[in-house]
View 1 (cartoon, rainbow, N blue to C red):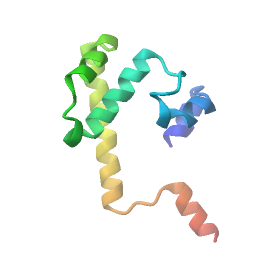
View 2 (view 1 turned 120 degrees about the vertical axis):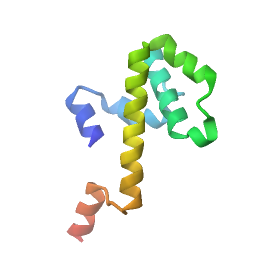
View 3 (view 1 turned 45 degrees about the vertical axis):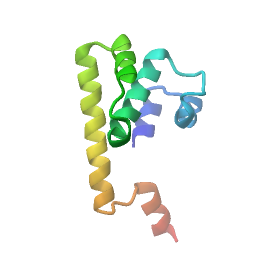
Length: 101
């Protein structure tokens, strides 16, 4: 769903494919890298405890309101992912492939 939305808004295939290698790929801005690092830190909060340096980098690129909004979006998506996993939701592509066989 989110990949389709990103494509509709002009995101390139290369950036989508390299998203899991965002640290190594030179395709992302410092602002995007700060958002991605914060996303990982918040998603993995039991392990990361949202490090100060990651938060400071986020705040270098995002206002307080933007940081709050981003964090709320991360939390919301994590909650939806947790609910979907808990109730054994099947991703649409996987469901379509299973129905085709």
